[in-house]
Image (cartoon, rainbow, N blue to C red; front, side, top):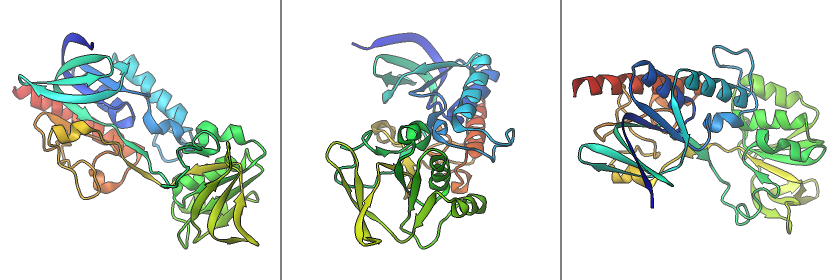
Length: 311
């Protein structure tokens, strides 16, 4: 049976990535009784190999930046709990936030769950996860020291993953379905100049091969004399999708055609008392960066404060 927390919070933030942490920081400054719930402080920021476009840093790893953000939030008095939200109910003018072990009560909610990795959709992808298939080069790269690996994708996340792996692995194949790599020119230039990275354009992976571990991938066009490419690791970097849950529909929160949460300029959703911030929204003109997630989190918290002042 779930334990009921007796505290009635002014605000509960669901998600502890950049948007959620910034929202919690601002909420604390507004003296709102706030709780931030998430499974991993910093969210997917932890998985970024290098970040070179955050205003306070020349260069920093995602893990280091996530640690800094979390440390600042905690220093300001933010309460963060490692807890997964499974449902939200609106009852008697309050929201009941239901997690695996607890039920929390709150006057308002900010959704900041961010994104999850898009999958290839191949038959054995799930089976070989952790056995050669990975969605995080920073997390798993060191397991492939001096081995041959592949990276799928052509955007910034794929390019930076390939560069990171080039410092660890013996060889890196960058496999992309498009005709040209996409992303920041500086990363494209570095990838093209790397002696360890070989780029395979207009190429798709059709199958994952190997019994207990990934041994090779089957391509839709020959590499050399065979469609089979021998690699020991495959890092999937083909973008992300909004991290949704059933409770979005329970609250009748409107989504756009790409399943991102519709928000107004003050980060309101279609549900009264619920705001959203970060990569899960269609705000910031779709420009999903750490800095815009922080901005949306701050705006959401400020508008929660205004909303509560009027009640």
